[in-house]
Image (cartoon, rainbow, N blue to C red; front, side, top):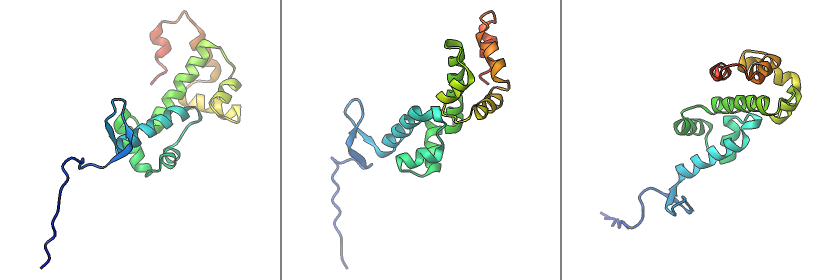
Length: 151
């Protein structure tokens, strides 16, 4: 009978960490935390072009379903909903601040064809580009009427 001796080094953490990864306070980060930061950072940098779960997963090197679960746990929303909301907010911001044309907004959000963008606007907001511009350019409306589009 062979008896193996197991020596535990209690100075080492039981949960594996990335040696080179530390948070803002200098404490080591868990692999999951590092991955979560990478996911959020990539989505924040890429939302304009409509990033997908598969694209994020490929970028961070993780399973798409795990990436989706982790992002939802962090933000409370699926990646697709988060990206959609950010894009809608940006379109409204562009209309309010620059009064831009639809082809300019389409180009900003990575659409090759203006028609595809205007169709997205119709589906996302429930109104045409022209109606959206009228609603958000009209300063005489009360603030609640302007924000009713964020459903």
